[in-house]
Amino acid sequence: MAATEKEREADAAAAVEAIELPLLLEAIFQRYGYDFRAYAPASMKRRVHRAMQQEARRTVSGYQERILREPEAMARFLDAVSVEVTAMFRDPYFHKAFREKVAPGLRGLPLIRVWHAGCATGEEVYSMAILLHEEGLLEKTRLYATDLNARAIERGKQGIFPLKHMRDYTANYQKAGGRGTFSDYYTAKHDAVIMRDFLRKSITWAEHNLAADGSFNEFHLIVCRNVMIYFNRELQERVHRLIYDSLAPGGVLALGHGESLQFSLLEERYVAVDRAEKIYRKIR
Ligand SMILES: C[S@@+](CC[C@H](N)C(=O)[O-])C[C@H]1O[C@@H](n2cnc3c(N)ncnc32)[C@H](O)[C@@H]1O
Image (cartoon, rainbow, N blue to C red; front, side, top):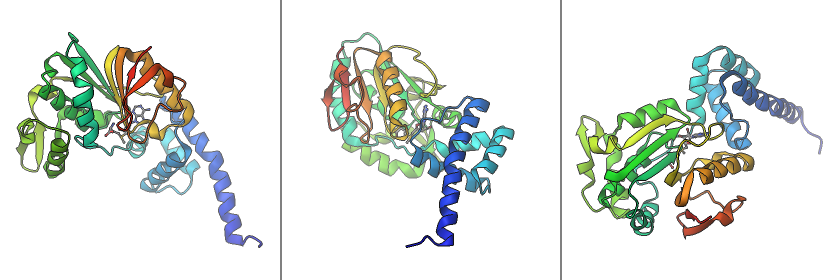
């Protein structure tokens, strides 16, 4: 059946956009140094479209012009592409498995260094700090929380979260094997809560780009959950290499449910601590 005029126009528009999208990502890299060239194309396309709508731009080329000339538009693009969906004790059974299978092995260390790579606004970092506190390990732990998005990092550092989420977080905390009362870990004020000082003091916050930056320490635990799902295979491999190089011998890696070591060249350098919860230990 012959294509209608409308279908032909749509095909032509899609073909032009297939040229424009890589050009936009290249332009962003050259102008600002943020490297999105190796992100999974389908989800990047969706996010660029969302950003274009916010800027009232109809074509990617028109949007590119704005991004190149207005750094503020770049900051808004970062917000649009960094998917910040997160929660405290997200995937409670991961935290339960961590408590039972990983925490005991950390007891013998004189000092514990933890890296949360792609931590968004920090909910997962506070969850880990609470867990380590309950296991008697927080005093000798330093948590490093990094993300590409400076605004997310700033919010994490403040440790202020909406009160309305606390009911769900309390349920998660209990399922995760929480030993205390969740509300003891924050102070509520109006419609927000602020995390307790001793938790905030255990965390160091920094901007770090997994697509471009290198290792900055050696860690006993690296948590990189729900971040690599947005990357293509090549970039995933880069990040796996960075993580591997940043882990101490016997160190532990925690990935998100949708992620895996399965296709990585480094798979055989790890053993699964809990396969379902995507917790692995570096063995060589
Ligand atoms: C869906 S959130 C996951 C947050 C948290 N890890 C969790 O599982 O709840 C993904 C985060 O990855 C960050 N991210 C995306 N690309 C990144 C990169 N190249 N380097 C560092 N962080 C990145 C985003 O800014 C976002 O905050």
